[in-house]
Image (cartoon, rainbow, N blue to C red; front, side, top):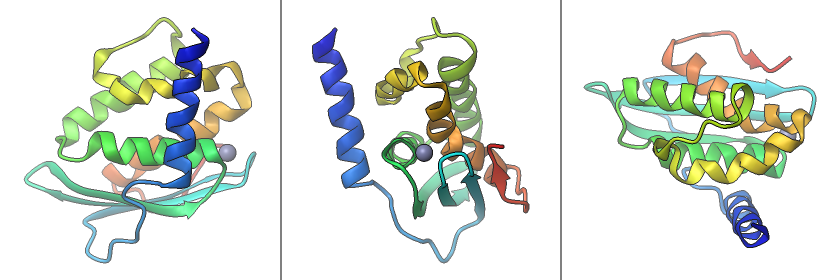
Length: 148
Ligand code: ZN
């Protein structure tokens, strides 16, 4: 188990140091901003959705290691998915992080590395910030998302 934990930590450290899809997009079709005042995490999410497919998903911002790694993992995981698939994965991830600790879906793939965060309830908001921002972007919500 501790080996697995080390592996999880390695993935989070890697995604924090070298975030994937970390750049502004000028031609996004959907975007939203999210804040986590509790920790000071801020991010902006940009998507290009064509024919219901997420063709591009980028983010920029500044935050703690957990929020950056989570956003990076999310963009990597959702690239090429349909909007419906993204909504389904959001719900699975949300359940996994908050509601039902026993939820483990194979659909979550590498996102499971964030499991360790559940032991620190204050940090769960860091891990879910990108996802709440995604929801806002998909629903074209103009008001920035706040976890508080
Ligand atoms: Zn944070």
